[in-house]
Length: 197
Image (cartoon, rainbow, N blue to C red; front, side, top):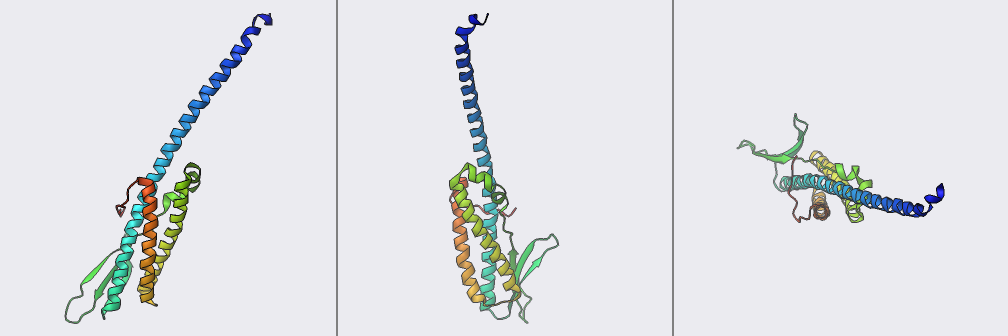
């Protein structure tokens, strides 16, 4: 009875192998497409974080300019305070007996690195070039957080403020270069559009 099926066994085996190969190719294409969509989404959210960090850099440069004015103009003061909403702000003013103090300042923006840190393992498996730049920029963002803390300390207790202003300005330039490089990889754009929320 099995002798009648024996010439067909190799054809069924070959058919099963062909179906297996077709299924695997289709599965590979589906996974590859899913990985590309995931990587694109990760790049989008990293770019958004970098836009927020660009606002932080601008904010910290504003604080450094305020520090310079405080150092150059006697009677000028600076303070960092928390609004009822919980956001940090800075302001500087000059106490002059003849005039009402003119106050100037701005938001003390936070450093954001939410998505890169959360998806580091996925980034490493999906795109090695992006991973290297994310790792480097993550280190730079740690430095940016340190500068933020130092700015807050300098506002309260000025210690070697002139040297700190120079140091922070150089560091902010280096951090911005790293952020721009990662932003270009994520978006293809050279200029970062700052975002405040």
